[in-house]
Length: 170
Image 1 (cartoon, rainbow, N blue to C red):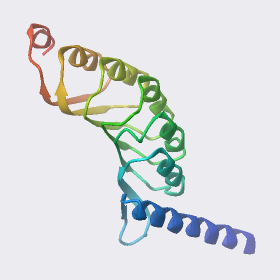
Image 2 (image 1 turned 120 degrees about the horizontal axis):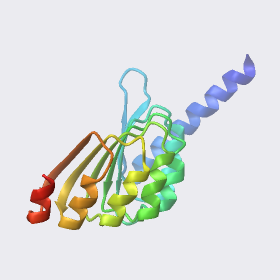
Image 3 (image 1 turned 135 degrees about the horizontal axis):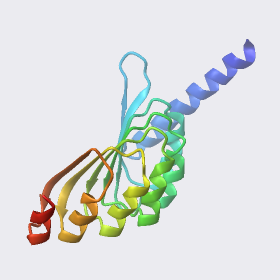
Image 4 (image 1 turned 90 degrees about the vertical axis):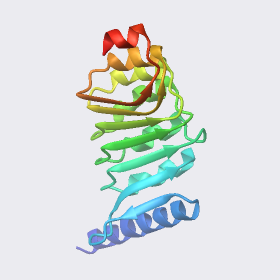
């Protein structure tokens, strides 16, 4: 009755406030035209912005960018039930933080841009629900070998450094 109406109004207010706060910080927030639900957030650049994401229950795509995004952003992502796609662009997330991506319940697709070490890539093997990894960055031999070992159904490279070892794997 009245209590559930009040709770619904409060949740809507929190969502509107989160959208406004992110947009004011220069973050791109996409809302579904008919439902008004947030489905995509791009260019999130600071850990504290990640706290707003828990209000977006239908968020499916997220782009994290820059060194201001660290491991501290991962736990708030675990509260986003429908997040399936994540892009990491030159973030400050450590290899340990990468293993924590397994906490995101619906997460299956990862796009990487910027520099990622072989340790970061090996850490992805802990994220069992991951099925697609896309590298939009030049990948060196050690990183390529680590990526080739990932238990995913689809692996895409935009550019890698060719060597005898990488040719052998191909």
